Amino acid sequence: MLNAVAVTEPDYGSDVAGIKATATKSDGGWLINGVKTWCTFAARADVLMLLVRTDPDRSKTHRGLSLFIVPKERGAGHGFELAQPGGGKMEGRAIDTIGYRGMHSYEVSFDAWFVEDACLVGGDDGLGKGFYLQMAGFENGRLQTAARAVGVMQAAYEAARQYALDRTVFGQPIAEYQLTKAKLARMAITIQAARQFSYVVARLMAKGEGTLEAAMVKAYVCKAAEWVTREAMQVHGGMGYAEEYAVSRYFVDARVLSIFEGADETLCLKVIARRLIESGPAER
Image 1: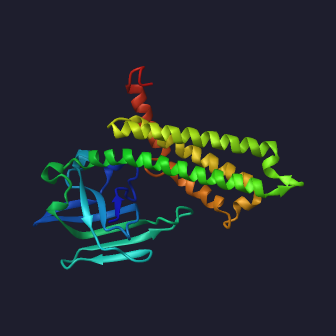
Image 2: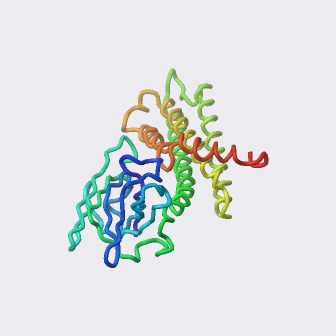
Image 3: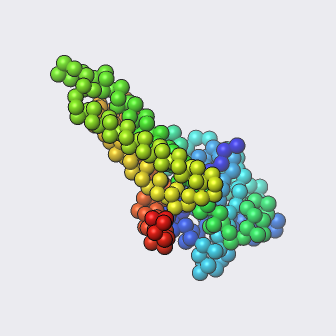
């Protein structure tokens, strides 16, 4: 079973507490209305993890949000339209992106889409708890995004190393030139540091710790991936800009990693800096 997360809205990205999509109590369940965006795998997903506003009092901000598990049929192609016997509709359109073309993200609209009471995560006790549940999920998302960044860095390094061995310039492989060796060495060092940092945070999170470190590793490793993939492209020279070489895809794929699962600037300002300022000397 494949699931997708539906949190972000066209006007609300990092400001999760302000989302507008609603779930209104109905006979035996809830009616969902609103629009979500950047919902990855929404078409092929069997269920959506949907964060919506269940309290109409918007002054309650994050305290008025709840989390639902929304079953759905799988959609085919780049768009989908689903309808319920009672008149509810769910429609999705794929968002074209410069990279990450293997996992489409969608804008999904809900019009009186009905879900049963059992779909409310936590039941009645879960009302108003959706923000907290979602934030806990984001912590794990940050770690897995860092892991993805390590993977794309490793692939870029391996591609650059092989190209350096195969490409001959002025009578010798470019791997023999000092500048190329220095580039490859710095790439390898950065990747290893990112990998070990990720392992440490994973062990902390397995013990129920590491909230701050999860944000830090995501911010650091994803930025590092941008640099490593750029260097890999440089090693390829002009061919690094050609789509026939995988390194061009690694470069554009790495770019989005410091945007989703918490934009780099938001993580640094709202999570990391705040926690460092509030913590004692030992945690720093």
